[in-house]
Image (cartoon, rainbow, N blue to C red; front, side, top):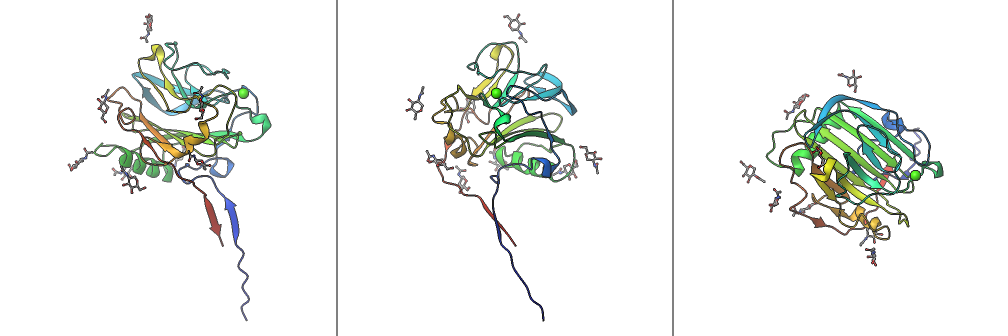
Length: 243
Ligand SMILES: *[C@@H]1O[C@H](CO)[C@@H](O)[C@H](O)[C@H]1NC(C)=O
Ligand SMILES: *[C@@H]1O[C@H](CO)[C@@H](O)[C@H](O)[C@H]1NC(C)=O
Ligand SMILES: *[C@@H]1O[C@H](CO)[C@@H](O)[C@H](O)[C@H]1NC(C)=O
Ligand SMILES: *[C@@H]1O[C@H](CO)[C@@H](O)[C@H](O)[C@H]1NC(C)=O
Ligand SMILES: *[C@@H]1O[C@H](CO)[C@@H](O)[C@H](O)[C@H]1NC(C)=O
Ligand SMILES: *[C@@H]1O[C@H](CO)[C@@H](O)[C@H](O)[C@H]1NC(C)=O
Ligand SMILES: *[C@@H]1O[C@H](CO)[C@@H](O)[C@H](O)[C@H]1NC(C)=O
Ligand SMILES: CC(=O)N[C@H]1CO[C@H](CO)[C@@H](O)[C@@H]1O
Ligand SMILES: [Ca+2]
């Protein structure tokens, strides 16, 4: 006689717009520190960011990525700031993973993450001849707040996806988007600079995918964000049922 027991585990999972992350995905974690940074991350594939080629990147605890040096800045400056650095701010505010959560990253040059990036970019930007060859994923997992910055390149085009999960209201100053040297290019995600309002990031999008913002950030025509803005208001409950 066969006796079967079915166990159902109900997990509150990360939003399904998130790329794989954390130790389960083989990510490297950055040190636990209030205003710290990763050590230098050498890129397996250099990329062009608004005309400047970068071979390295830093993941900074306070929600941003920088290129030439790490940054401990926890109070965002307003974009456009006409500073002398390029910066990508998934959610720039005074985050602190000493209070919990994991900040981790990984770069990919093969496998299913590339396939997913290929599909996402070709969905978000139709009629582009694009095949992802390199993907970099940085994730702030439950560092009060959960979001991801994904860089996707084919050696020519470069895209950023920012994926938002649960975003905690904060009294700290906050901002999301990107800024460049002398602010020749910049973008502020609408609503991202109001701490009492930022939980709505997970309901917003410029590519009709709730919680996701996408930008083209190489030197070319970088305009998938500036024309069309969608705001989708949904209540999402992500429940995975495994048996
Ligand atoms: C996939 O890329 C990783 C580095 O990201 C490398 O270590 C591995 O050898 C690659 N695998 C194949 C099958 O190319
Ligand atoms: C993409 O190409 C197809 C076929 O060439 C065309 O019908 C469609 O309008 C194009 N879409 C965009 C967004 O340019
Ligand atoms: C994209 O590139 C991979 C190898 O890097 C290849 O296996 C795949 O067929 C390519 N896809 C398309 C649609 O060109
Ligand atoms: C930024 O602006 C300064 C002052 O106008 C100028 O000297 C510098 O060359 C600019 N940098 C870039 C990369 O355009
Ligand atoms: C922030 O958003 C809230 C809620 O929409 C609004 O009441 C408040 O005025 C906003 N504050 C600023 C500084 O924009
Ligand atoms: C947005 O996506 C939904 C499916 O998720 C689709 O039904 C709808 O037509 C899309 N809207 C636009 C403007 O593309
Ligand atoms: C960006 O695209 C929108 C249409 O989607 C267009 O109206 C606008 O002029 C474009 N801006 C630039 C700088 O190309
Ligand atoms: C404005 C709005 O409807 N915001 C909603 C965004 O989604 C969260 C749940 O993820 C809701 O709690 C908010 O009310
Ligand atoms: Ca901090």
